[in-house]
Image (cartoon, rainbow, N blue to C red; front, side, top):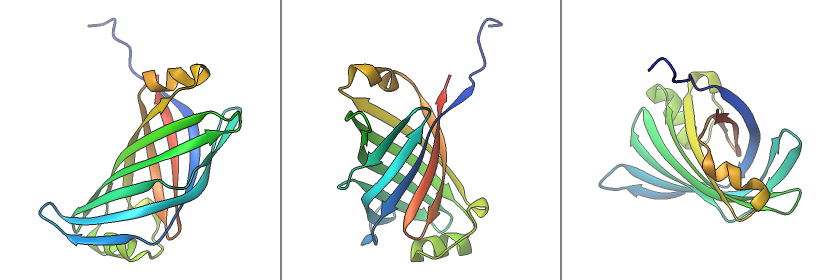
Amino acid sequence: MSHLTTPELKFFADLSVEVAKPIEVGQTLHGTRRIIPILAGSATGNGWTARVLPGGADFQLIVNERMAELDARYALETDAGDLIYVQNNAIRTAAPEIMAKLIKGEVVNPESVYFRCVPRFETASPALSWISERLFIGTGARHPERVVMRFFEVA
């Protein structure tokens, strides 16, 4: 077992995703369901940029007053014209009063929220095929009209 390496994190990209007003599905068997439409945005990595294409959404499940499970699906178009499908699963937890403000779309201090994610990427681009063969993790912050995230490759 001594030959196993400890994974390291390598910066992959910063994202800023513009979102619309939530569609409130309501209380279901599993929790409160919400759909947050994704409008636009940008991504910046080492030597590349991309835009977030409209048409994606974040499918949220408010599990309880402290926790939400997030499942965002959207596409990026790189500055080279390559398309990347993103599926980003996340959890967001905070004190009940902070979560209530987030759900209402109010401003909160990002440091008071635990927001961690596991993005997965798919692409038809031969130059970018390696991103489908790696694991990534990230951290994020929710603002009233956008979500910002930083993704890292687990090396």
